[in-house]
Length: 343
Ligand SMILES: Nc1ncnc2c1ncn2[C@@H]1O[C@H](COP(=O)(O)OP(=O)(O)OP(=O)(O)O)[C@@H](O)[C@H]1O
Ligand SMILES: [Mg+2]
Image 1: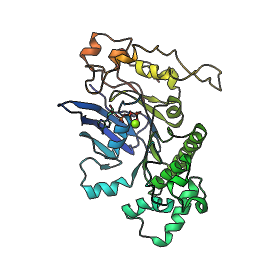
Image 2: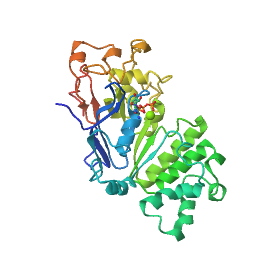
Image 3: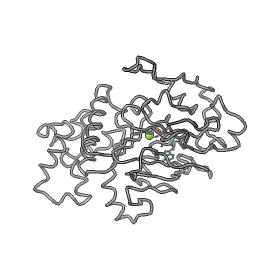
């Protein structure tokens, strides 16, 4: 039986859950891009779920379908007790205030003609909490201070008068001003300098803890996702291949694709407690890049099989179900057995 549950942490109701999301894009001549093919996930209250995978595997498409921009072709998304998929437009508009997204390119996300104070007030004026014109300036200033910007310096500036890092902070402040329950971060630091990346990641982490936010954090940088996430979901060609706790991920990952991804890190970190390596031996990359399969015509059975050193006939005949191998650890691979003696 296929297991679609992707959290095993505790019994609290998820802040966000999705079941069997499917997104396909028309690609001409009757063909379609199978961007997301049956993805399910749960995010607990206050939890950060990282989504990891190489370019084009469907991470952003999952993120966008979670906020219904656009809705998936099929599948369901629930925000706490509200099913977003199938809501009437007005109800969806109201529900969206509780789930916000931060995009990869902060400058493109901001209207260049508007001043920071107006950019920040867009959300409250759309979502109906912006009627309080007396409190407007105070709320804007507080939102800017919360993300480490001086209101007097930036309030009246336009995006081109800010640095990339400042623009991303404005995007974060804009999302947080609506007091969302869930924040989707789609590669929020990829376009920034390394030093600014660390500042923004620390800021997101601190904000998450202070507000008890749930987050979905999308990136293709393994170390960034691992550091900020409680659990990591690894995607390959529109499918989930493994979900596991980020702690000890290098040691515990068993799906051949996850092992391949982890091999892209320069070297495993050493545990401060034991001084031992935090990582198992990664698999060597299999197959030349020219063999990369296309989402227009994904391989039968296991989509990773054309690059997998463990592939057998079963892998092309049968799709491996995503199943628990121990609490909180799910894997979709015919060659991985559940662990019988897990605690
Ligand atoms: N609007 C669209 N029309 C057609 N195809 C699309 C569209 N958006 C995405 N795709 C395709 O869907 C697949 C998944 O794209 P997506 O942007 O979700 O990948 P990603 O994992 O976010 O990649 P990256 O790491 O480069 O951001 C890709 O093959 C992409 O070309
Ligand atoms: Mg993307």
